[in-house]
Image (cartoon, rainbow over all chains, first blue to last red; front, side):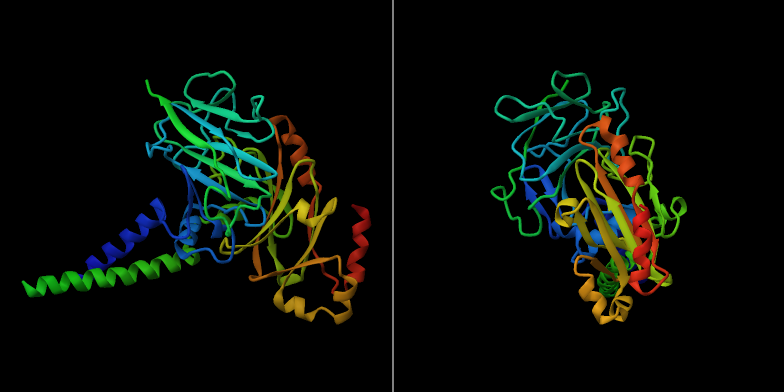
Length: 184
Length: 195
């Protein structure tokens, strides 16, 4: 009886932590969360278990860092049927990419074959700022299609950047805002 | 009653142990980790281009569609590896992972500071076996120590816009990952000219 319970509790909590993720060693700025140590040998055991279980290869610390968002700035889950705008400033980096994935980390099919934007191709305003519209239907400017899926994740990857294990807050790494503008 | 409470407490405590053990053991026992997923489609000590990231490609999660990726699955048991990656127009990086997907080193084109990123990858034992004077002449040779005998080298080239993807892939196709069979590095220098 005790052993059965032990197995259930132990394996259940392992499954939970490797699926949902833990708060260990995370850097959260606005809607965005990164694990600066995931690309180093100092990676925490939970992240290690998660990446091997999911078959991921984390971005090496000398290469860059990835920030993920599954909720907007007001903690509302990102909904592919709504209009979401990502805009504002980005941390110092030679390149960045913003990519939309489904909850399993796969790209979402759309007729434009548009899965994300890079810092080079995004259309900017006169002040150098940008607005990326994430919506199920076509929008003017930088439109990132959601394919109408219910839940998705955004990944903001910085390449060749000073952002890393020494980064603490928004002053070190100003991240763009994520705002849900309207839902049908 | 006490017996049931005791059983539950024992169960939860043991559960904590099971949890810790399983979390720590998972990297060793996971059968679908990145290395295992890449093993069937890559050859040992050869650079293989990965298929472009698109919705039908479920090889690995969170692949960046703006980045061309090539992999060299290495095995250092036959000797150290010489890696050479020409720098693409936008951004090129080389990341090293152990057999258990631990990222232990990564470098990009700017920190390499050359048109071609050239590295020697070896185990710590192979590194300490290098002749002393070799280290001096090799001042500009970057030597990376691999914590494991096998692992993955991931080469990335960024395509700033989708139209430049072919170019990024082409620059990775020109890279090489070879075992240095001759121990003295001078003989191994020779094939460099052919590139």
